[in-house]
Length: 170
Image (cartoon, rainbow, N blue to C red):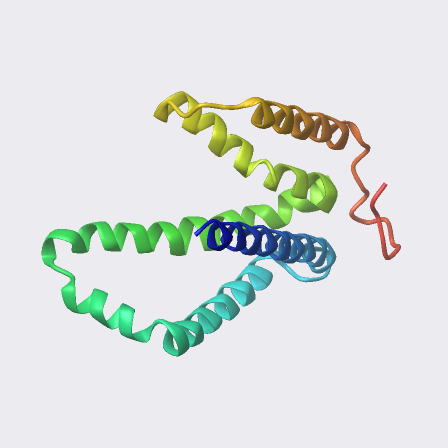
């Protein structure tokens, strides 16, 4: 059982590293393409690609579970499902990325990624305040290290989005 738990933790850690790599690549590509393509076109392409890939993954790996969920849906929970779909579809996958294009052009991918990476810190703070979670010594050291990195990134000079060279990062 301990081996299974350790393997599960290692797999989770590996998936976090892979996800971080994808996020970093996305941010760098967004900075480049945000200068070349209008925000509406860029986000429309992102949403379309994301929808097609999600539908293919659902058909390939989760069709049975999705069909069971739809079959068990009732009028009582349909309002919540619609609200959740609108939130995930519009706010998270349309409005936020649209605003991200302009914001990231202003601050650059390094600063932007630092802010995006703060999500676990905010989750920990919110859990501490609202859910009564505890924060151990490692959590405090990690939070302090992250805040230090955030300070360093926030005080760096922003890149010039019209610098005319391949890499505008300072």
